[in-house]
Length: 402
Ligand code: ASP
Ligand code: MG
Image (cartoon, rainbow, N blue to C red):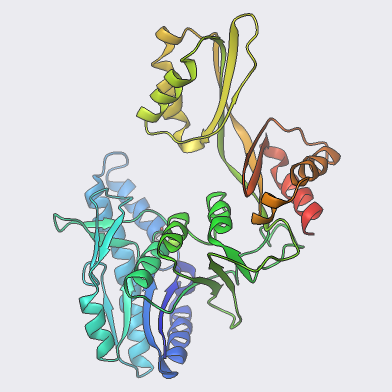
């Protein structure tokens, strides 16, 4: 007998048929004598639809508190419907909102962080042998106001619960059957991984391989919660995400692209100490995350600094630099949003030379120009023209895996 946390995403409970499908999957494991806690997201596009409704009322200035009040309703619908389906199948069940399940968060509405899960109520219900169905994505702050955890936050709810309850297993059910070495809809030779490490998964999640929310992976790593990503529609094993995985023959686990990138160049800066500090200190004050940074070699007492940020933060970054116009005295400032970051990820590259050169060879053979390069112990990223992004993923994936 085990304690299992199961999370089902919005597409897995999108309509009545899917809700019953999920109810059946839950009941199967319950019948084997397991204790089951379920976390669900809002059905299908509900969250997007709710956001659209808010825009009809107040397109720009709806308060974050009321947005959270609104968005949390999506999950309230799905937990009630799923609980009803389980009742109909004849099994004991109770649905709980985030606050009833003991989720307390900070007060950052719209992107709140979980501070604790006070699991008394859940434990009581489990002792009564009930299946407990919990609304993901939501909690309560210290003022007793409802908060939400940010888009895709239900994954994090599930991991937090698994950690708090010391669950034996945390299963994340979705519409793909695991984590692939590339997007299987675009790269037919993409392979499903049996296992992947937290660090590798984090890199892929951050790159927009949309299987797991990256905060949830961070939390899983922190509390050492083993995850399984698997299909809600087909019954077969998925991909296990954990600390240490067996070394497979492949050096590279996956290749992915991120189009949500903007490249900003500041041209003709004075070549003196303190310039980079000034710029990035200001950008940090504007709460912008910088990714790749490149500084040119100084020439004629000037230098250029180029860096990337996510596209949604590019306005703030430009504003930050403009505010330095007087004191920096640069010649030109430009921004390019038609760029993409293509990366390969794999813990194996740490101890194997030649990975970067192999990647660059694949790109060069395809005639794709590299604008910037950055590396970490387990990742190599290149910045290229967005129009070649899919091609780049394909040739790089082919070179290492395909
Ligand atoms: N329903 C929320 C969203 O669409 C949370 C989630 O799906 O995890 O972002
Ligand atoms: Mg969702």
